[in-house]
Length: 178
Ligand code: URA
Image 1 (cartoon, rainbow, N blue to C red):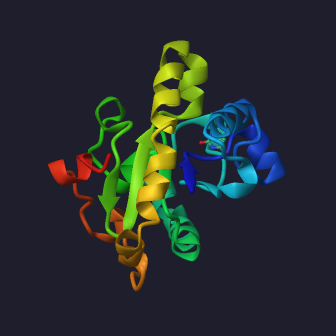
Image 2: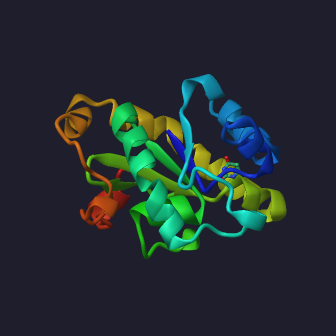
């Protein structure tokens, strides 16, 4: 599962996530690690485009939270890749992208991986290689997540992300997942 920030103009029109330039880059990065869009679920933190494409505000994120939570709990993803700051801070409220990107964390039952937002790499081509490096972590993390003892962590949890009050952990054992 991938979680972005919120729909842009194209996404808002079509009612589908990541259909514009950021989506094309997402597809390209997925292809490089042997995945395609039909194999992943893509969601957004907020479900409508904020006016003028501004950052989503805390109350807007709060209003959409119930939908995102249902998507996560319905899918029970093996791995949640967090595209950018808003998705990352949904799980890790104090996270800074420069520090947390490319680091897997366990947030309740969910294995999460913050990465830069594709739009950031489109704006700043210096981030492109970092994004590729971070996406390269996805296949081994998926393999890790499929191990029976790890998969069992997800069974029986109906709540789990840090926004439900469980702090996401950030200790050395989490960082040594790879
Ligand atoms: N950016 C996002 O965060 N989500 C989309 O769906 C498109 C662009």
